[in-house]
Length: 312
Image (tube, rainbow, N blue to C red; front, side):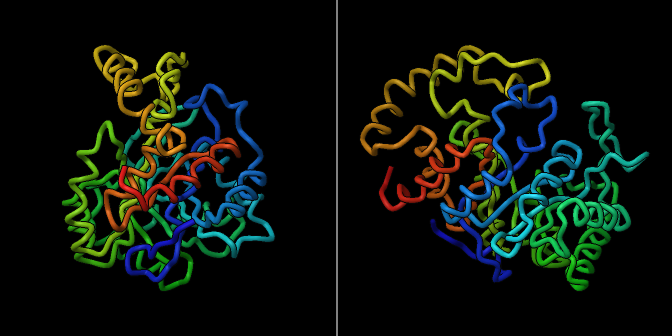
């Protein structure tokens, strides 16, 4: 495994981070039965040198954090734990975001809401502090200064060590950086949809902010051509992506056959490794966030680090 500095915080993290959205379950994942025990996943992550874990309160409405907290008992010090704030399911908790699985989720980046989010996460995770807190969705209804000041106050209190932004824009990063250091931005980025991530790189360099990509495998569609024929329920996030629709589907299948299959054979790796290694090579401060529900996925993903030393 390789390690990197998270922004200019001095926090050392594995370049591959363990995403736990699927761990929380819910209707966004029809095939919940594939989930391994959280403790088994952490065992595999530790064996591969992964020390960086990402979760959020709304992943399973607290279930991801609870399962992770139980699995972390006795080994909290081995991992850098990252969770999020701003999305909550409290009564009238801010600006409406979405309704799912019987819950109404609100978005609130006010100081009081952030503090409530953190206290809830600390309790569910069974820890005294959070290494990295990420604003899940910046919300312009509250001043940037109020949000940044609230996060910095939590740093001073020792409840969090650093903080970042997710699902934002370079302009939002610029605004937050006027008030304090933003350790990372967490944004969707993949070979099929690279433009949003590439827009961030100049700002990330300017502010010494790490870039953490999610969605690099497009929810599994870039793990093999057979995945383009999978069927999912209407609420499953994978049913909403455009890659099974023509003409995109035919174009991707052609790339698998003519480009990606020969490359995977050449390097003796999985398709996933190709795209993961590609992502890590695109920016010097790149963190690869990949969701894991199977031990074998962790073992395979760890191999991508060895490919980055060779041009793909």
